[in-house]
Length: 176
Image 1 (cartoon, rainbow, N blue to C red):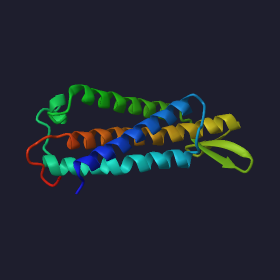
Image 2: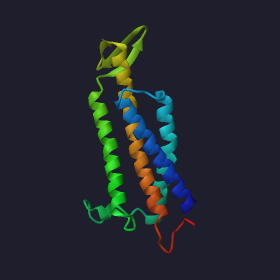
Image 3: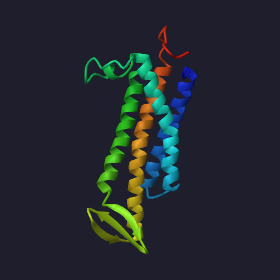
Image 4: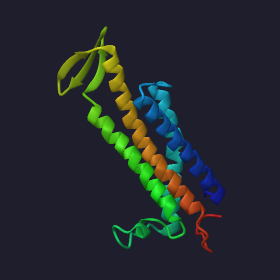
């Protein structure tokens, strides 16, 4: 089972995933591509997935997956010991990744492909020949979509691990 220190460590790793994803999304929006897509998305996944999974499992065991008492009350979704500012910061960061995801989807004009020496965008069996700059920009939008999804999961992992690790109940079932 994961200790409190382990959960705090995984929360820190997820926080690094948040910063990595956010930094790359900002760089892509500015027109720069600091690392290639497989490295950008792969590293974000490595930083995000373990902490998110541990946060889900720790909260499921610790709180026995209680349902929210009231649907639209912040206190229903956030453990009582978590400061409101932390919950609001997590929600705003999550909303930022959601916005980046929506904006990337809106800007996506098709699936960028390279056929021979031509750059094309394929949309519903319709191919449009584009220049290399447009092709690269569409690749950046696809990368931004992946990073926004992973960034949102990283926010959840950071919050879940930190919330469970800082819970000071007398009895912590399953966690030393």
